[in-house]
Length: 70
Image 1: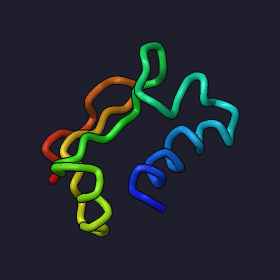
Image 2: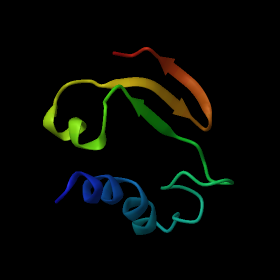
Image 3: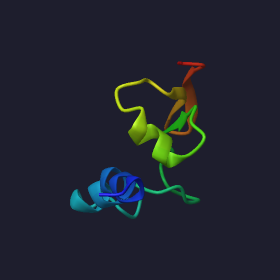
Image 4: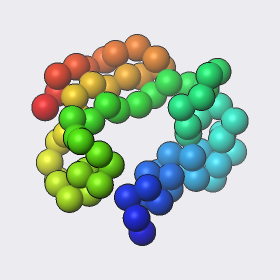
């Protein structure tokens, strides 16, 4: 799988598998805002540095819960 396919599998496809694709799984207005902001130059970098914690900010329900995690 490509990095983009992996990201889709763990976000939108996972939400669809539990019947919640309308409210979670993608970044869209009106959807629940749980997300991680990574300190990486691109998506591919996340997979080349597997095992490293590249998270810089974590948001839960639209609110920052952790920042500067790295």
